[in-house]
Image 1 (spheres, rainbow, N blue to C red):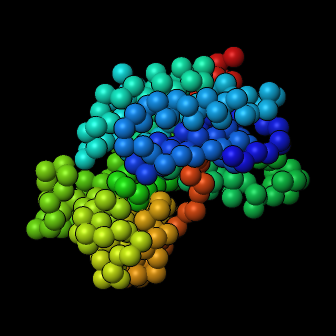
Image 2: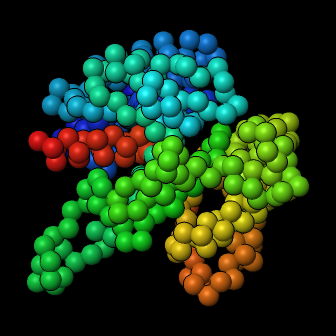
Length: 318
């Protein structure tokens, strides 16, 4: 377990993944004050989750105890009962995630898919970068000092794409997630990138998730993602590049921010395929400056970004 003692507004952040569960107390920048992780058990996941959260809460310095929290996991989210219902992982359906984490922590808990949380975290990191590079003297900038905060807007918004066990994503405009009718907007894993392609867990064919998720690549190669042949890594990148070009053309943006473990694991062959296809597809005049940016964020940053939105709303309402 890691600890730090820099004071700040804090929140509980939990990443509930197929391979690991990570929980921590994070500050407004998404940095962990206390954090711990376990391998996700095959059975009794909720008991393990509750015990981990209890340990992290108990380890937090008294002056840095959180007041809100969030959990990110493979989506979609069924918000009313407080559950995640990921395709291809039906044993997690009807698991009372919100109730378990609330009971273990005593906090109000938000649930969000990992990709939508990643988009929020990528937005907040971009805003912090802009603030850090901007003039801080009012005489130079013509404005007061600018301090990054949850919900502050990056001009034009952010398209975020998360490549993990699933392909997920989100769209952030004016500092907040675009929700859609079912609060699933931006979850692009089932965007068709090859109409004659691979069968997907959703029942359709050619979905991005079949090519560019850890689960999808492992199904193709019948081996661990860590030993993926370069040709499969390059094809995953090609499909992501194809999807990114289409997303930018559709949403009239200049960049997509990509992250997640698949990017790091597949490395250069993946990136080569992505760059080549993206450049080939971006032919519209308004996309001449379009680009894909790779973001390296902490594992708790997505849940931290979601939780700090709750914290900011609580402060505003006070």
